[in-house]
Every structure is written in structure tokens, then in C-alpha cells.
Length: 242
Image 1 (cartoon, rainbow, N blue to C red):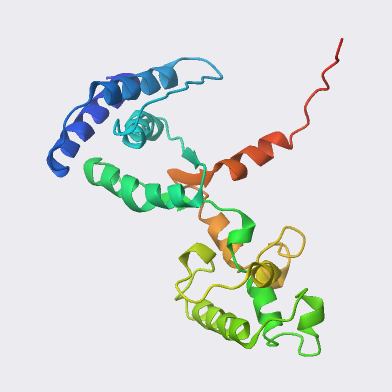
Image 2 (image 1 turned 180 degrees about the horizontal axis):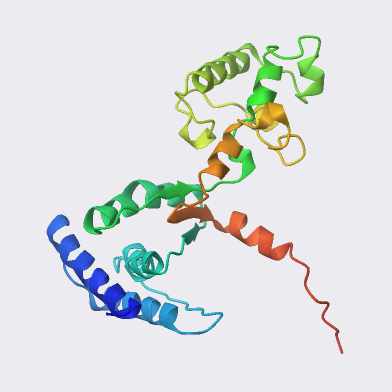
């Protein structure tokens, strides 16, 4: 059995298992067509293959592309990057769709969530803001455009405490406490200029820990801006207008 045939067999067995796991599961022709079209485009022996699918609500688009892509990728020792429009959709895939797929799929899958720097606190900046590093630093002038309120400082202290005890991973979307005003959060969030993994004080910042988890993951769930920006920033040959 070649890879293409093995992928078909895995897709069929996963669908069969889904029919037992999901109450009132029905096989939808439009969903199965999407699965098959995705699988076919991946099996083409070409350097670049693109497929565009459009389907209405209720078709089961997410499960369709998971079924079409993951078995093929696993059999070819490839990673899958799933890109969404929003963080909310990322978390839906992570917390709802992928666990259901994994329950029906017989091979273990490692999943990583990729977000931009500004979603993560910088541990070094946070410590400096609280005066636990460089006590001579006037943090209000150095870090904040506007002085933080007492409530802001209390939130920052709770963040630092939970970060230190590993009760929080530094991702603002997983923070369950009081939210900081945007200017205060931006002042302590990771940034490309100051929060570099090459700086010893930043090696264990949440952003760099999260990035290290992407290596070797079977599935990486990202968002469009994160995936598109590196592509847009590549050098492109100039177009001569005539």
C-alpha cells in the first residue's frame, strides 16, 4: 500500500470513528468532497499546489481540512500549519476541533499554538516595571508613557507572581485576572527590539518558550498576520510597468 492509499485508509477509519463519537453524525457529501479534493491536491507530484474551497455554514469545513491534510502529512513526516483570521478561531481549533479529531485518529499528534510577540509578557520588562531589577530605574519614565495606577501595579504583581510559580504562561489570552489598559500592557509585552533570545535576561521569556515549542510539532495553529508577514517581507523582483 503506497502513501496515497494509506492516507485514504486513515481518512476512512477516522471518519468511521467520528461517526461513533459524534451524536447524530451524518456523512455530508459536500464535506467528503472537500476532504477528497484536498487529499488529491496534496498527492500531486508538483512543487506548488493550491486549492481554494468555499462552503456554507454546517458543512464542517474545519474537520474536512483536518481529515484531508493530517493523515497525508503524518505519512510524509511533514508538519501542518493552520492559519486563521483571529485568536478566537485559533483557540476554537486548539480546544475543540483538534481534540475531537485526535479522539478519532489513531496516531498521536503534538499541537503548538503560534501567536505574535505582543500576546506575551516580557518577563524582564515585567520585573523591571516592578522594581525587582535595576532598582535605580525610574520605571514610569523608562517603560510607561503614562504612569500605571495602583490597580495596574497590583495586576502586574499578580502577573509576575503567577509567572514565577508557572500558574500562567505569559500569554495575555490565557490571563484570567484583571486586564491591563492597552498602553500599560504594551509597555511590558515582548517586542522584537528589546526582547531577544540572544539576551541572557530574555532567554526564558514566555514568547521564546512558546516559539521553542513549535519545533517538531505535528500541527502549528497560527494566524494570517503571523504567517503572511514573513512572506510579504521577502525580497520580490521589481515589476516593470509599461
